[in-house]
Each structure stands twice: as structure tokens, then as C-alpha cells.
Length: 164
Length: 164
Image (tube, rainbow over all chains, first blue to last red):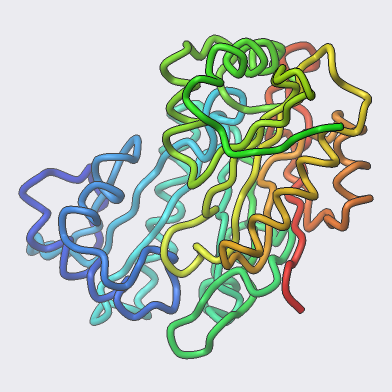
């Protein structure tokens, strides 16, 4: 049983290590692997419109996601989300539940679509998961991601419309 | 004869009206049409890595463009540019010259590709121009641009690799 709720500042000591480990791996997110705590707090908590945490019944944070407009002004009806699951909690469907939750939240906030700007093509588990949840590969950017182990790899732009 | 050179702060009184008129039209850029001068200065001059102006021999600014990394860290080898031509100077090839210039600058700065994130599909002149200059439509985002006159219209992601 997973509880997904808005992030509160007291969650940060649990959220930061999850984000740090994920970004440091350099295989899924573009954020510089060496990003420090203040920078990660800014981009995950301060800049987005909303941030959420996914918690176990005992309160342990197992995942987190943010939601924000993907563009200013005339593009602000499309949102962008980023999801991270604690390494020890992967394979339990937590990313899928956060993504479903984000679609409900995005609709409630008036967004008309969700766009992922840089889904690393070698992250096949994620690509398949987003496809299963209704996202489509709009196009593929050649060499757009500098994978920490593999070097330059392709990245997909993925998109799902929330209104018909 | 067009001179394209780095922006200097003394150019702002000529640059601002061009940007203001372009953004206010709400048919090509996502920036909110009502963006004020300080906000536009921030996004066109302060946030980008570099800004340029295209000038007539008498010094009149006829166009301007910015260049910046499109993503942080592991995506920062792909740059993003935005080009604006003064309404009275359109149809003279100024956008094409600025785009060629930006490709030279981007290569010199070490970028490996240029990405346009939101090329409004109804802006057919621009789409064709970028294609002529070697950019490819990577994919099309349904309804991603809220055109001030036409409502929700599609937008293209366009991309050109600068290295082989």
C-alpha cells in the first residue's frame, strides 16, 4: 500500500539521498551528476509547480515526482513531470503509480498534456513503462544524452494528451 | 550587408521593441504575450549563454538571437536558439543568416547539436526555412502551442546535428 501525497519540507532528508543517488548514476536524468544538495532542492522542490512523495505505510519515502509547466505562457498548458524511485524500492510498480497519480493531478490543475523531454533510449524499462501508461514516442533526438557509462546515446520526446 | 555581433547592453532600446512586438503577437513564441520588459530582458539576455544582434550598416538592429544549453549537465552538449527579426525587416533572409551564424557559434562553443523545442506548425515559413538549413522535424507535439488567434495548434521539435 503506497500513499502518494504532496511533498513537505520535512521529507527532504529522505528525498535528497534518493535524488542524489539517481542523478549521480548519470544514466536517466540530465541533471549534472555532481549537483549539490541546494541545487537539487531548487530544481526538484522550488522550481516545480508541485512535488509529491510516495510513502510506505511506515512513512518511509520510496519515490518522488515533480510537476511543472513545460513551457512558459502559450505552452504552459502542457506539463512536464520527473519521477524517481529509491533504488531499493524499484520493481514494485511505484513509478507506474506515481505516473498515474501525476496524470490525475495534472488534469485537476488544468493541464492538457504531459511531455517528457529527454527519456534516455537505453532506459528501456522506463520507455516501455511510459508506453504502457499511454505515452507515445513523438520523436528521437540523436545523441542528446551523455550517458555516464555509455557516452552519447539517443533520447526520446514522449507525450500523452490528457483531453480529447 | 548584415553585421551579426554579440549583443551589448546599449542595444536593448532597439532589441526590446522587436521582442515585445513578436511575443505580443502570440503566434511564434511561447513567452507570455504580456511579458514585461524586465522579464523579456531576463529570458533573452540574462539566462542564455550568449545573445547576438544582426545590424544594418547604419547600426540599426534588424534581428536578434540567443544561444543556450537546452538541458543541464548530461544534456548540455545540445544547444537551443531563438531568433527574432524586426517585423519591418522580414523577408530579407535575416533569420537564415542568423541561423547560419548560430551554427558556427554553437560549434565553436563545443555544442554537438541544435534543438528547437517548440516550432509552431502554423509558422510554415519558419518550418521550411529551418528545414532548408538542415534541421529535421524530429516529432510533432499535438496541440502544444496556444496560438493567440488560432487556439491550440501543433508544434514541432526540430534538430540538427553539428558533428558527424
